[in-house]
Image 1 (spheres, rainbow, N blue to C red):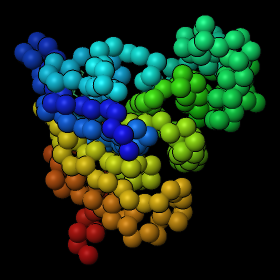
Image 2 (cartoon, rainbow, N blue to C red; image 1 turned 60 degrees about the vertical axis):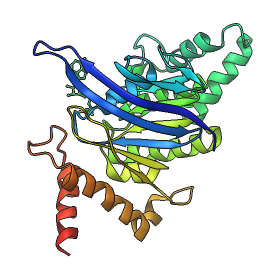
Image 3 (tube, rainbow, N blue to C red; image 1 turned 180 degrees about the horizontal axis):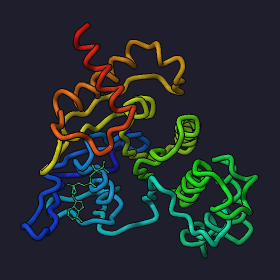
Image 4 (tube, helix red, strand yellow; image 1 turned 90 degrees about the horizontal axis):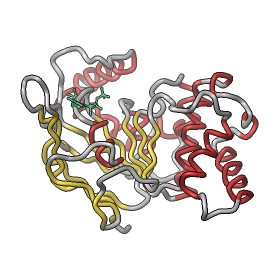
Length: 284
Ligand SMILES: Nc1ncnc2c1ncn2[C@@H]1O[C@H](COP(=O)(O)OP(=O)(O)OP(=O)(O)O)[C@@H](O)[C@H]1O
């Protein structure tokens, strides 16, 4: 696969009243076209900062990001971002929210009717055609997130940046959207960079999991290649020894190698369950 996204020696420090805070240091990562990469690490380690630098929303103070031989200095339509909480405009319908992004990218390149078809096509990809005329307040959280994904996809981005896109959703909706992302990515071949706190999600979706060390001066700790055939089926994987091995590797990185002393702000029932599991596995 052709390499197209390179982070080299990326570092960033933020000015604070106590002096500069070095959030990231020496982050190196080379991502191939069409790869699905998960960024995982403890809360506050710098995952969103990495994503925002790739998105062009933050400027690295050291090193830089190259996309297709060009330095990334600002946001661009070839990199679309999906945030944890949807960012739809409440006064526009589902259709109009997607249309806004489509007009931004394709005005002058597509006719009005081509744009209409394209909007419909992207709503259909995330199974939201039936709600095209609804306002964000009239649809569920999972549906809003689906529209956010449709809006991002409709920009035909080479790189889809997702910052905990399913974090706020219930387990069923989350599973459904994880499957949709796998299907859509297989169809379109976009590069996907996904931040997650969910170890199962990371193993299920990724080609590689990038595990980050704790900050300050966080960096890439380990990179785990996930060699599982696609399409991946969550039920079949539950009993797959290789899947469980990968899962264990990530848990071991998080809760042994990069153990955090203070309680995790993101500590959820699932995170505590993961920690219990790794202790049990270590004892066995
Ligand atoms: N604008 C800023 N000014 C000062 N410090 C910042 C700024 N933005 C981020 N930081 C700090 O940089 C570090 C990394 O933050 P970041 O949001 O990237 O972490 P994260 O891994 O995405 O966290 P979470 O998993 O909780 O979302 C944190 O210590 C954070 O407090």
